[in-house]
Figure 1 (cartoon, rainbow, N blue to C red):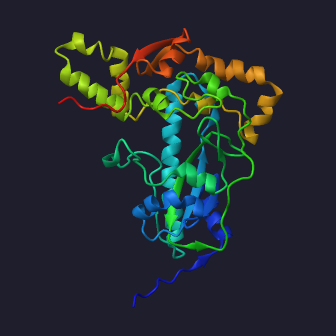
Figure 2 (tube, helix red, strand yellow):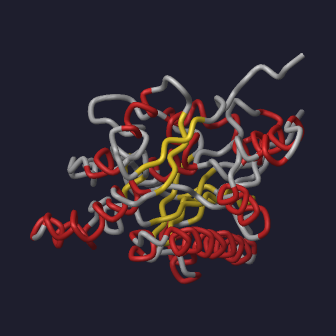
Figure 3 (tube, rainbow, N blue to C red):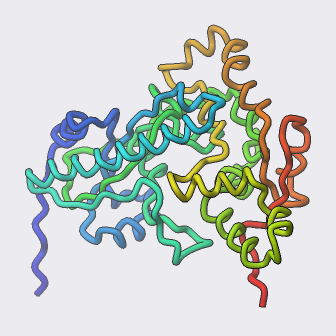
Length: 325
């Protein structure tokens, strides 16, 4: 006869206080057996078979870094805050270990399981967990929008073997104010009001210096007969960008949707008082920023990028292709 594992119940207040005292800006608790997580449960249990609950935490980015047209300072903010939330999750788990709770800190992002590419390469969806934990709702820009901090947040999840006396539930209202600024600033048209989010268009451009662009770069080096042919695929600036992503950390080409978003109590009131200032100071410098935009030939993204005279349309291979025989 199989002996049942004893499960201790902990108070949600105690667990949340541990997280907040460690440095989280907000925290929510989710029971893994809830019906709405049916499609997520298998991945979570693969990572940690003893998982009973999920702790979803957020740490805020410095909003002004994200808004700057100097995108390298935005990139540094993403990475710095990412490091902070990763270490914070580990500190929280260390403190939970002291009261008898064991668990696993899930990667906030990369590295992921690339054996599953081009399928789902992550096992735990931080956005879904954050929504279930009442930390926000998905906006038009496909970002979780926190009721206070809006889009200027990063997410992480901790899988634990403890059971709580109570759990959080999704918010009844979405913090998205339907301003459509994210759609207005998106250089590829990946965000369009009334249409599904175009992940393909977004990732082709934003992650140009990530995994898919790297594959194109390797192919260009292998197949080019000389530097003249190579330069038809990658110019000097693009090669430098790829070097920077490899030597330092990945560069994101866009994320303008996060920069212009006025959702959240910290920023919403200022936006509503002076919408013109927000557009002039934040949206227009990003929308009108001279830069290359990476698209696939014949796509809606190409048509959208061509409408902006400040953008240099760069045609790149489709992200998923059949390799040559």
